[in-house]
Image (cartoon, rainbow, N blue to C red; front, top):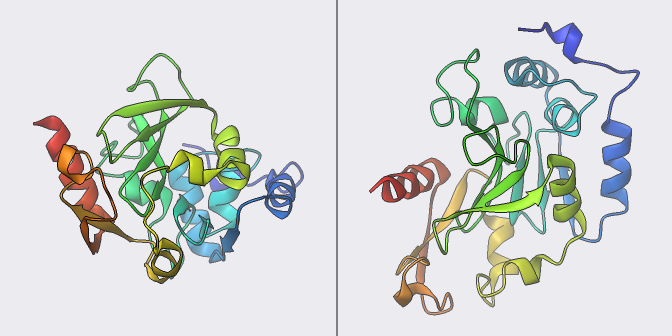
Length: 220
């Protein structure tokens, strides 16, 4: 494993570029502050350099919230989003730092959707982003790299991407949600009965509980 000094590259850091993308973003973007020691620990565990957008987001941010917190891009953890990328993946996508994961959970949303970076376990398109869609329970390839995913979050029409999955009052409710919880809907939104999200009941639950529930349902 590379040392933290090998992973931090201040001269060729991707952070200035990522900040430019954020400053010109069409969607609302909130950068969560990072704590130095936690950032170093998360970067070391992930083993990516700050020359890459993923590495620089882990090192320089506690995470990034998109569209009033609808999407949460994982960084090194913050009070608003306590999960960091490597620890969130440990025990889910791999069981040790030395083990190569089949995919990495890199972001998620408030309705229980998960964005994954393919490490070879989801298809031949290594390095591409997939979406584990809560309304279908399918791993859908988005055909994007991690950098392209950032552009998608910053600039794409998220109303269109989430068509039928946003309720009337979401803009008031979502910002109040902690980054480590999600809305759980009943009837489940992947069922025929749950397709009209306006009629579903919903409650806040820990995202860990939602992830385990969805993965358990998929395995069945």
